[in-house]
Image 1 (cartoon, rainbow, N blue to C red):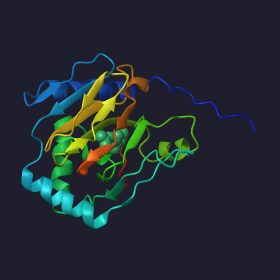
Image 2: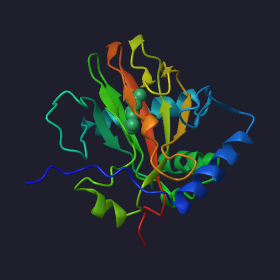
Image 3: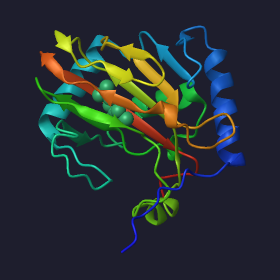
Image 4: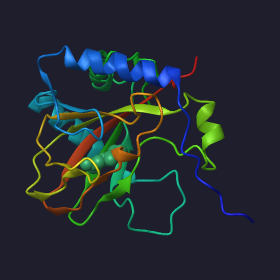
Length: 226
Ligand SMILES: O=C(O)CCC(=O)C(=O)O
Ligand SMILES: [Fe+2]
């Protein structure tokens, strides 16, 4: 069987429009700053959650966590070694946070996938990957029917980590150490709406302590059906 070739992904007017509308919304917000890189549109909000919200989310992750999974087939068993948890979007804790994230980005909450809680113990990591879908992969036809491509990612650090656990964009020259309450936001697409390969990023291994985060991935179309 011929080796599957990864298509780079196409230009897209819809993704281009989401990219520029969300970037404009973020740039108009004085609480949000852009990180210094030309490789991608990466922003942060220093104090997105309260300490109490962080504590509640951590307790929910500890309650519901199970080993994290991957969409792509990989031989590397160490690729993503964290635990994850689907955060119930209809819970009285999650719904308002979900809506705040969506409003901050100016994207309808229905475009957001289920919030993922993640926990990394010492030695655990999420090796370099793209959040966008590779359109030549086996999973792509299924994703196209449920919201299509991932556009923006919003990720929040829920605690301080003693050592390690930075989010590293090797091609963007950015390494963000976990800071409790901080929301990191980036566009996985280029301004023309094609997937931005330079958004490659890694959740580096925790060395000491435990790292808790939540991740929200937004789709180009509504992900939530009906
Ligand atoms: O743990 C991190 O810092 C990165 C997590 C991540 O890349 C993701 O959830 O998609
Ligand atoms: Fe990621």
